[in-house]
Length: 527
Image (cartoon, rainbow, N blue to C red; front, top):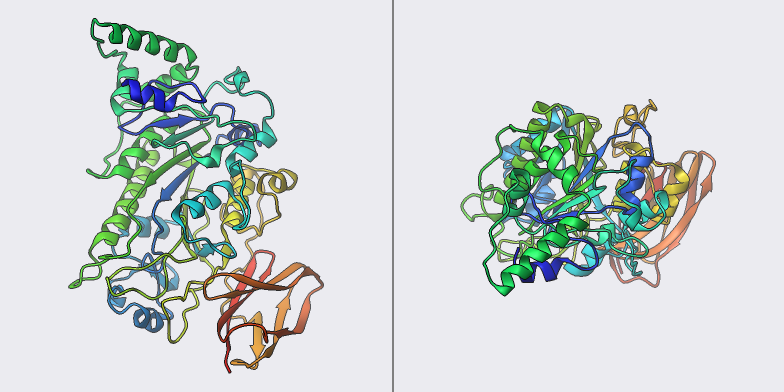
């Protein structure tokens, strides 16, 4: 280990003098979110793998709307995927996948993928750094949180000093990140619980018991001493080595695929019996302002390579886990800090936008596409964004509840609000069989307004069931301009007048939410 690497990764946690396949790993020993994952259900050995698509993924070219293809094509004539090239999904006609995503298409058709449309949050931030922080901490756009959603989870379930781990009940790392940056997602209330592994060579040397020679110099003796201290402080070294050495053969992974290399490591540790609950991996390059596609063939180009790499890596990962008889332990999800604008730019790219789809995959994931095709105006402008259908924290809440069996009280503590839950994972996962509600409601007009277009005010009518009903009004930048309804209703039809006198002319979106059901209604204010 180089001295600068040691200095880089020693504070505040102990160093794990290992890594897997060229990517540093953070093992979050006593982090309260991951400990809760293992403690939520005594017999639950479930694993969550988070795949971060850094840069802001263009979801509109990843999940292509077929039922409104004309509007989609008109909004991005220079980069639109040809309708005949879109990969079709079994028993779903309204949208399909980018032609580079054959692996995810196959997993979907096998019943192992859920696609969640238009995931975002109110009043989105378009800075890479701030938007990433919002997603990792689970904050509102106007608040700064010093803890991550994962750290708060672990703090809730496993309070106490971090030096009390590992112990007899929790001998393994509770979370592992492959990559060089300790994620804010795992920051607890008091400290980061991470350890860093800095090179692939270190990881394989750990497995094989190889120690790189040090020079017979003063610096060499210092390095030897550092290694000894690191080994003494690494309580998880034995557990990681034991798990890794149990797997002697793995399935094929695509070559020259950074994400696949990371997922191969995760599969090895999961199949080796490591009881780590949470893994985070990442792949970059999604900030596609220019040259997103090739001019002669929009199915090729930079974005196609990125999506193909992600899809191939996920498919190889799931096939490998299946061959290793470990696939039933794993649920994975993709996320990016934001999406892209509806309208493409003149550089054959897309600019920073708001909502975008997420992909959740695994043996116990409910097959389906949640939500409707994104609302696209007849005449798009450069400012138009895809309106949010689902809050990203609803996805977190659903996975925590349905995969890790976290109860309502702890969910409210972890996410700080009671977010809408979506039927992402089979009730078998937590031992509860429940019917799936019909949440795709585009054929049912649950929210309407009249007149539309309108000049200063419009009457909004909505049909709701039991429980809390919320109506939010957003502008084309995704900014939340009003919440006219947020209360418990009895089932029925309701109306109210929305006074928009103070708003500028343009397109607005009324978002209706009742339980797991949501619907978005475009409204146009004119002079």
